[in-house]
Image 1 (cartoon, rainbow, N blue to C red):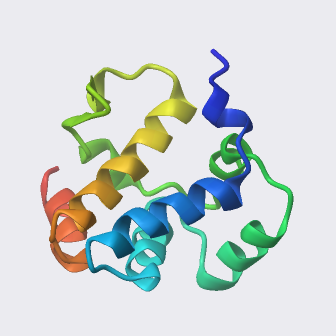
Image 2: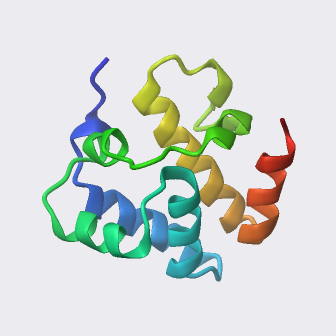
Amino acid sequence: MNHKIYQMDFKKVYDLLVKKAMQKGRSKKEVDELIEWLTGYDEEMLKVCSAQSLTYAEFFQQAPAFNPYSKNIKGKICGVRIEDIEDEIMWKIRCLDKLVDELAKGKSVNTIIQKYQEEV
């Protein structure tokens, strides 16, 4: 399935995620930590991805090591249950949305990560 978000520029979506978090008093560094935990990208790789012409789908397709604990990310995002999403790329996108949502709602990065690492 091909969604409009797949073709969006990674940098544009990344900036929107950071903006969402910062509007709630969170930092770019915290968003980066969640992205790094989820995808396996490191700080330098994220900078390279932001500088390249990379689609959002390509960003997830090229993720170095998608976190095995990501399977524990559940709940609703954009009115859809994450665990019901069958399209792998959309599932990964919604997992990141969920993490940033929790950050924006006031949870710390450590609390978010620990929550999903414990739900095995």
